Image (cartoon, rainbow over all chains, first blue to last red; front, side):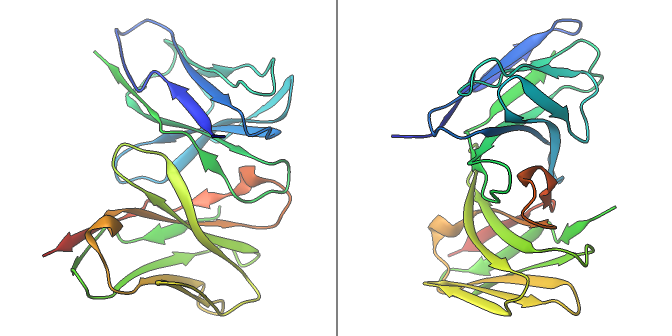
Length: 113
Length: 113
């Protein structure tokens, strides 16, 4: 079955540590995205990538970094510079630029202790 | 900037109709979407409507669009316990990039027996 796999589902981190969230897709989609979800708020875009080896900042990129070395993979690193990293992180993909439907992974819940 | 507003909670009795409302500010919105998020999971596209349409029906789902008032609604007929979820309204102002999708805060639908 095609889909998007995020791991880990739950992650705990101490303050000051970097952590990397994995996102892999086998849908052959060109575009991939990272969103942050906080209770009572809509999804906020962190980073997106329309093509391999290229990515752009979203609305809340500060304290985060990404890479897109392979079409299938778009990992997100939450750095110690992110002041409030506890959240639910969602990875998504779409067929390409201009495709409105987003396909989402199951999410990763990060808790900073 | 563009904004999408939804009420946070809705409670309905099983078997009744649910109506989830959404308002948006971007007058150039081209596509309007409804996504469903079940507990601890990612979002799934339920349905979408083009801005040149007034209504779209898909089985138990009816989407109504009032472009003049920038108001979108999702009606779920014969609401079942499996409809319990968070419903996100979203809009995009063109087919240029899925990165421009703006999400509302989500409406949590709960079903009373």
